[in-house]
Length: 70
Image (tube, rainbow, N blue to C red; front, top):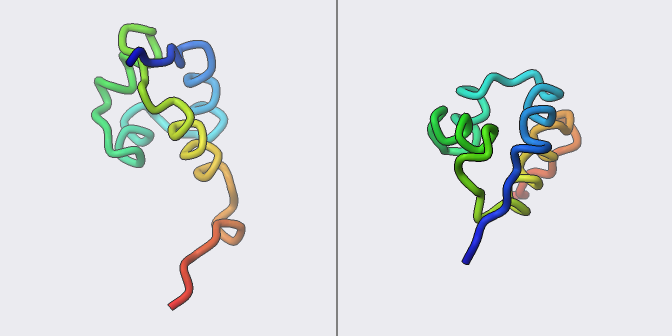
């Protein structure tokens, strides 16, 4: 299975969130080196749709993020 090149949109999405590569990596459970390689197009993301969803969730105010009831 091939991955998706996210280098065309990931850097700007990360910057809009005000996150460094290391901060984004920490939130996604990846290494900062991996995020840097994604942004340079050296490494393709196999889960690009999930990455987009994660970035969208990070962009939402905390009050809009749904929390499990319990």
